Image (cartoon, rainbow, N blue to C red; front, side, top):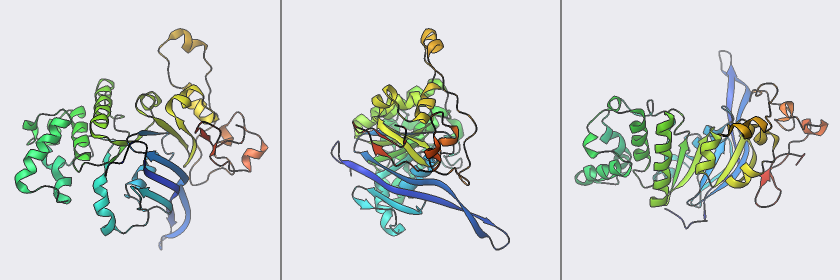
Length: 327
């Protein structure tokens, strides 16, 4: 299912994901939590698209909608030319072989009652991709692919370290030979020394297998290292998207500038002289979001029109898209 490099593998158009808020004995709907509100982007074959933003901005919800773990409220999700946004389960199941996911928590995402070999090989059994005779050989191959000894197949998750457990998660995600892998903050629960190993593993696998990544994270230095393009989210919407080099060299949205100013630089002279941007207030609730641009209550550049107009995501040149009327 792998496309030619540069082809669009997945596309999200005007994606919305609302979660109802209910009250009372009859569970009457009183409002919506707009976790994702009108998000659009493309992921090209064999590239890594980084999706960054504060906790609660909707990054993980976008990833789960693409995997169809959530049924979107509206919008389109195109994967390999198929519109899967409203596709029934019986039709989407064969397409799921082309999608894998690596979860954030290497401790909670593995069944403690299963052996490591059973966990990694479970997708193969569910999709009927190998017979019983070849099962052990295929799982052994997956173990070696992620740097684990196949002799560890009979161990249970608590016998592995955190980094080894995440390697099991990577092996499970690759079991069905997917084209797209959604990495949902795959290193945030690991020690710093182990984070680098997992990042190097993901980069090596991408080059070897021709994988495409949606890399969800809040660590901007990691995203800069691994991503070809970066999309910045704030309160359910994408506010800026461009190439990784362009974003870090020339951030245009005030929120992106504030995020990048918080990334430490390993040079005390530069760190002391550079401008720091401190945002005022707290992130508004997705249940009661500000009118107009959602960022305007915290923005240093806000004018009266910012509270009235919802700025569209527009191209300002060089495939650099930004959602701000002041740019």
